Image (cartoon, rainbow, N blue to C red; front, side, top):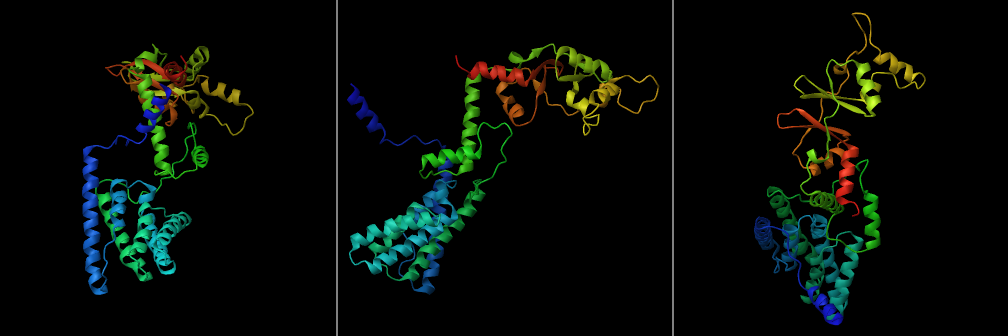
Length: 376
């Protein structure tokens, strides 16, 4: 029955989502909230003595403690939202309690104006609404109360949050980290900004965390779809290789004949000692002047007939010695960062005895990726 299914779906929407944090993180949050609030309360009570303040601890601080210690990465839990949100909202509530005689109207106006002010001051903090309401309900009319206890309580809680979260491995304040965009990134910060602008709602997550979650979700999707695919499944077997002493002319002829752009360099036991690419050849000639490049390349690879030579003669003199290799039984998904962000185009594959057994190029990887995640 469609109507029953719709009602059931609507009822499920009221159920809370399952949390994804483990018991250790829950214990960390519980202990932090208790210790943080205890520290703020003790110091505030000590300060209230000289100040002769009757109220030294505000109820909204409990809600602030939940944010600071349970979700320290939330934009709503950062120091300025906690301090500014509670203090400014309290000032709004005090003003409404002083100037609006009817408490019900004063309460509604106080909360609404507090939300507006927090938006404008970029310190949106849910307990701030409670702070405004508390000022009205207790008929607080002295603006000094915004400084104590509201400001003081909030500041002490934030300081406790900085200390506790740092000691327990949580970044707080959670400053957004600007990451330089990768050249071949699937999306940019501008893309995220455009989507957030269309969404047009407050998200309780920072932009850098959102970007990181999207990237990690993509990688997890690759892992699931690629399954148990290993390097041996997609590599080109029996790759053409050269040795340290292979003449440049021979190596260049091999690349030109087989239409490949890189050759692994091995020793006599087939262990990889380097890799030579077309870029290694071109690095040996002057590319600032475009005229005569072909002639300079021919001169480079031409063997010198004399005993002494002032130019490279063999592959080992121009090869790249730091070469990234992968074992044949390594999961293919592990190569995603190497090809997408590491700038690698060719990865030699070695067997259990570290001997060259294959080669994976970007084309091999993209082909395997397309077969795994492309349309059926």
